[in-house]
Image (cartoon, rainbow over all chains, first blue to last red; front, side, top):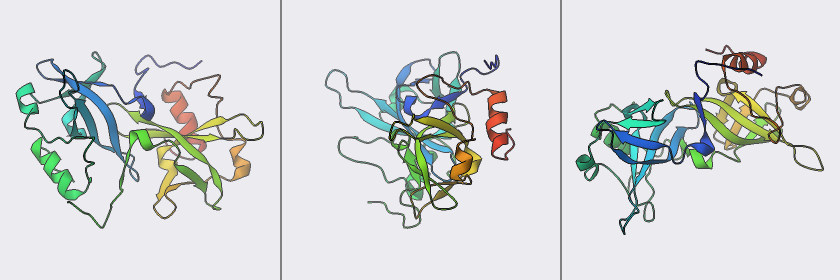
Length: 120
Length: 120
């Protein structure tokens, strides 16, 4: 059998993406990944969509996060994003029961811009 | 509503990857995508795993394809890979019921090398 002590689980299967935890820099769990949005041609993930809410009558909201805004933390087994819990209320999000974003350029500029990144 | 005539469905959701068709350059359908294998840190798809078989008593085999070996064809709504049906019998594959590949460097070099690409 092959082995690689350096990076045994460097890759994640697309059907295992859902549920990966997302934390902020204060080590608070913000939510979990619902899905990645992948460029069909380049194979690059452009957004990770984070789900938050759904408890105690709160509606679940989905937060598209620019891939560049995420850092994978191998110790936690989850992603870190620079977003306080207070900021979460203001961050771009949508109700997945009611709408589906159109992932075009203007949306990309809005989402990437909100997190301080340039949408290329 | 936002619109973008250039690229209305440029992105694919990770939970919709399964079932995307894979054709060869002779326009023969080889199989369909089972999953993408995504680098957790970079967000780059490294492999697309194609499923083939499962009909008439044939066992289903999974073929890890280097991302670089795939070209997305917007007209067909599927991927093109340079692989004849005869070559399929010789291409690296595994029985998903019996084994799971370890996606390490030596595996990457083997798979990428088979299709004429350098594994970086």
